[in-house]
Image (cartoon, rainbow, N blue to C red; front, side, top):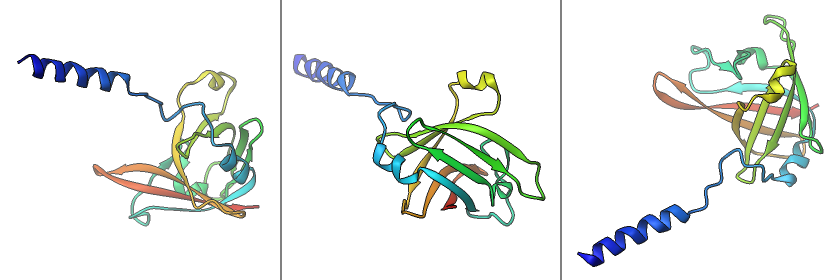
Length: 157
């Protein structure tokens, strides 16, 4: 009995001492940030069922409106901006703050008005396939209770 109580308390102690680093940790991956700095065009947005299902990207517009959008990523101050200028969609321009945490997650906040700089909400996406001329951001979406990957393909401008 004493042995089982000791084991249970020891297990709780070990789990309680485990380091917890949130996804939005301020520890950054500077190497990847420097690799993607610059001007880009979002060349495609793809996900399963994209011909039939509409996905709202970043709570701004339909994902198809983002195709052709222009993005700027400045790595030394983690600022940037993007502009939607798709002829069949409403135009939208916004500044952003962004960084890539040590887990390779792209953390972005859209700053579309002066009060938004104080917001704690943002978007967390996976970064993958980083090259000199392109990279992908992958968001996790939910369609009918099923998780899907929404892939944003960026090409250097």
